[in-house]
Amino acid sequence: MATYKDIAFLERPSRAKPMLDCQPGAVTPWSGIYRCMGCGAEVASIEGQPLPGEDDHQHAPGDPGEVRWRMIVAAIQYLTRGTPSAQAIRRWQRRQRIEMFIERWMPFRRDGRPKG
Image (tube, rainbow, N blue to C red; front, top):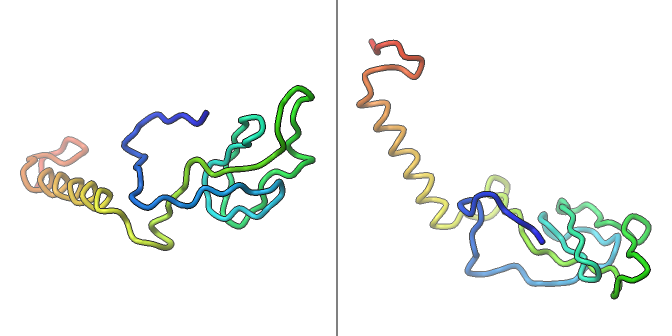
């Protein structure tokens, strides 16, 4: 099962990418974490790269099911395409306001020396 350290880096989209199963060795449609629906193993894969093939990922004799990869976590790349969510924009704006406040009202530089 995929785990995370900080939920602030994950969001539940209003429009999720379709849940589709990919065959072993298929080209990855989107970057993210893929889970084998046969045994539960997980791999990270980059868009346009092949998922592990039948030779790279084999089930133990007792594991049921065939090798099928399903994306469980999508990697959204705002810098290359698409638009950021409203929540991401608000987080960015908040960080900008905090940095402006620090620059304006803190009498010392970050290295500890007085300004000016």
